[in-house]
Every structure is written in C-alpha cells, then in structure tokens.
Image 1 (cartoon, helix red, strand yellow):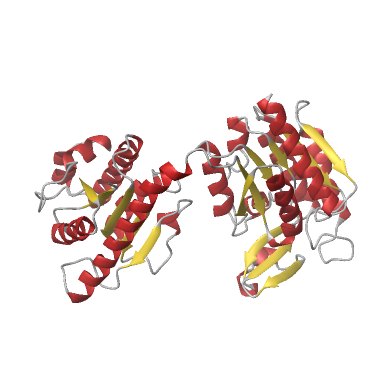
Image 2: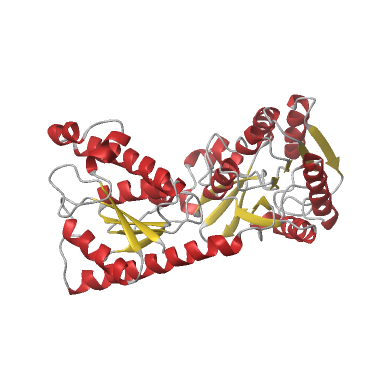
Length: 409
C-alpha cells in the first residue's frame, strides 16, 4: 500500500490536517504525519514529532518556542522537514508528500518537497498558490493548489478543497508506488538538452538522432529555471549525458537579463564527469521583458521584439568576450569528455546572414576568447555552418554518441 507523508503544523492547524489525513485514509492510502508546529501541543499524535524536526533543523523545539522568533522557527523547521522527508523517502517509507498552509506553512512544506527527487508526487495546498510560486516550486515538480480561503478552520468550501487535495495525492501516490515496479528495467538512458525557440530546429533534429540510437532526450527550455532543472537532474544522477545546445542563460546572467540560471550554470555535468557537447546557442541575445521594462542604460542597444512580453537585446563584442572567458572557465573544470562545437555562421535563428542580430564581429569575439582560454583537454570543433543547419545538428548528436560509447568502453 502506498504511503503519503503529511507535513504540517499540528498545533495551529491540527483540525485541518486531521481532516486531510482522514480523507487520504478513506482513499485507501496510508499516511505518515510530520509535525512542524513549535508553539503548542499537537491536536493529534504524529509519527514524527516537532522535537525530531527541530533537532534535524539544528535546534530544539524549546529554543524555538521560547524565543518566539517566527522567522527563525520557520527557517529551522523548514530545514528539519527537508532532512526528514529526504530520509523517509530514501528509506522507502513515503511515496508522496502533501502539506497545507499560508506563507510560513508553504515555506516549510515546499522545503520538504524540494528535498525529494523529481517524479515523487508533491502537492502544496496554499494561500500563496495564486501568486508568484517560483520561490516555492523552484526546479522541482511541485503541484500548487490554491486554497481559495485561508487555512483557518473547516467549512463547506475548505472541506471540498481539502477533500480534492486528498484524492489527488492518494491517486498520485498509488500511481507512483505501482509505476516504480512496472518501470524497472524499461527506461532508456536519459540525455538532457537545452533549447530556445531560436535553436529549436537544431535541438529537434539532434533529439531525433539520439532517440534513434536508443536514448531518451529530456528537453529543457533555457529560461533560467530550465537550465537549473537540468543541472539538478545531473547532480541527482538521472542523466547519462548532456547536449547543451542553448547556453543563452549565461548572457542573461552576465548582462542582467530576466532569464539567468545563476552563476553555477554549466558546472554540474563538468563536476559529475558526464559526456557533454556544448554549443553557444542564443548567446547573441539577452532577454529583457516587455519594451517598457528595458532599463535606461540599454536604450541605445539593438533590440528585437520576439513577442509582446519578450524583448531580445543583441550582445556586444565586449560582452561576448566576457562570455568566452566564462564558458571556458566552467568547461575547463570538466572531469569527463567535453566537446565544444562552434557554428561559425550564426548561433541563433536571428543571427543568420540577413537576420536582425547577424553580427560576425560580435560572434568572433566570443569564439576568439573561448579558443584562447579553453584548456588543452577540452576539444573544440569549428564548423562553417549555422546552428540550425541539419548537418550541424547531426554533428552534435554524433559527437555526443561517440563520447557516450567511449565512456561505456
């Protein structure tokens, strides 16, 4: 029988969690309750006490309750809940996780959820689910359900919403428990690939070739979160190799665009020793947002209106020189086979000859800086092709396949 972990403050919201627990049990699924309340005694007895959670967070329940510092208590219980959820899942004691709450409860609940691998069902019923959920979801597959009313007592509406949440997590937990056995031995090796609209033809053709060779390709939209999600999977041991066609997130990180993946992008595969093919896809552009959101310091730059909400700004030769240094530094740390492939006729759909971002001098600044700074053990291949030429995509796929075969041998 599947088991759902329930994370929640049983002192202030015990009645709501008791109702949730009853509805999950009525759906034929076991529950394991983790108490994260520190102020009062729990309304009902959990399987994991608040004292245990506090200890896992590096403190004691008494210390948190005595100081009455809400921020410190939330942070500590979030750390503890994450550590305990990860341990329970690793021991095979929970198949899914659910929580309820406002801003504090959502912080604690989703911290525990983010500690679990992708694919484990995670459901957060929250007053915050109708706003900006990025701080809670980040790169994990967390389902956010808006509670409509506050998590403050039971009424005809809240009962309906909590009953729906219970049914949803029970169904997901059963499917996860059943599917784990069915999928054993059936999965093909996974390749992570990065894509933007302006590199889609390249990634699509390369994906087809890799799939014909027996691999499954997970394509990540290079929007900041996408790049970080791929790197999380690399560190989690899910991927056999990386086809990093679209490294554009580094342009946003350097220049100040809205789709940065942070300063650690391109490090995971290097550190894990995975075979990589890396291409400067879409490094000709920085994502700004709507036209009226363009900062004053950029007003004189070259722009392209991708759609009503996305304004693209052409990177300069100076910026591309910096990007060449950065990518070389990241790739030089690689412990596995890395091949950089440079498309000399353009790095995006709008960097082709005749297109608005076509700027051979700016591209050359990147190529020169990268060549000058790559370590000798990093292979660099230059092709007189555009990134979206079918032949270029084939070269990327075949190069990665060669590295993967070499690793197996």
